[in-house]
Length: 219
Image (tube, rainbow, N blue to C red; front, side):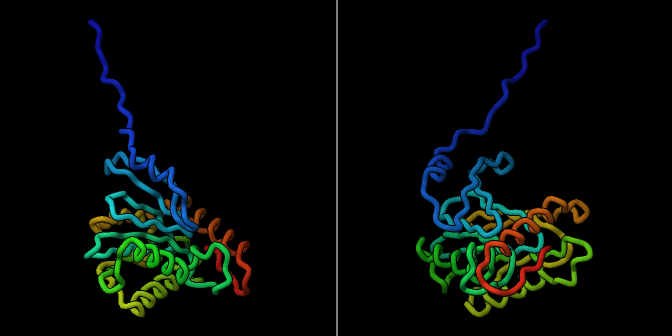
């Protein structure tokens, strides 16, 4: 007796992803699009120095060590976005400025406003700032990033409705920009090699590309 096996299924072809891939990208805008089988959703991964804004339920995700991701959502316009920055500030002359908090926040807010958001109806969810590399706590990179983003949002009068920051955990963050829903998974602190390598590599690139004075801490 022959035994038949079910044919393997592949992710559904997504015309939404095809359209996103075909669109020209703005400086700093994320461009790694894929289909997430777990959430059964079109997805985009935001890397250090990038951001993404949408008003559809595209899944926006990132992985954080000492970096910060700010997820902003307009509860009236129902449009949202996420950024991913490495360090608080390096000055106005920085190249690849999306890696630094002040510029990353401006990029995100400006793009949200272009999509119909209003500062008065924005709210924030903040993630990251973990001390994921043992022996590097004296640099306080995660603490500096966390303090920067909370101070920035307070100055801009954008309420922080939830946050998961600091401690020793790397994090995986998922954000749905149409609904404002966010989910965070704390990853095992003993398995941080990939996150640490990404942070170090991004920090080195930021330092080598900067045209202004000041040091960049490696973490």
